[in-house]
Length: 109
Image (cartoon, rainbow, N blue to C red; front, top):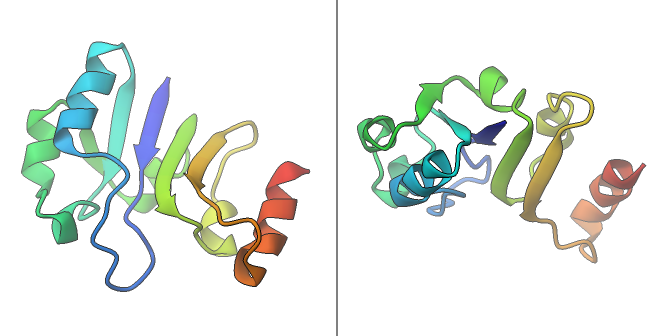
């Protein structure tokens, strides 16, 4: 099972959904982890640290085609359109917020 960690689309977001330590733990459990190039840069985690932890560093398209995609915040529709059918998306959705309510409804269908 592949877990994807995309770069956060929000300008200035310094958090990332997985650290190199988290990646190593997921790998030890048997998961394959794919991290978008630059995803950890603002959190001071360069791509090389993810690779040392065992992750594959790839482009956004490959990350969004994983079985599970995990992000910090709700991405825009353009990102969600890249999810493959049957994939699981994990993030802080803030379902009561007007900006995310249509996305939350869309994902529940």
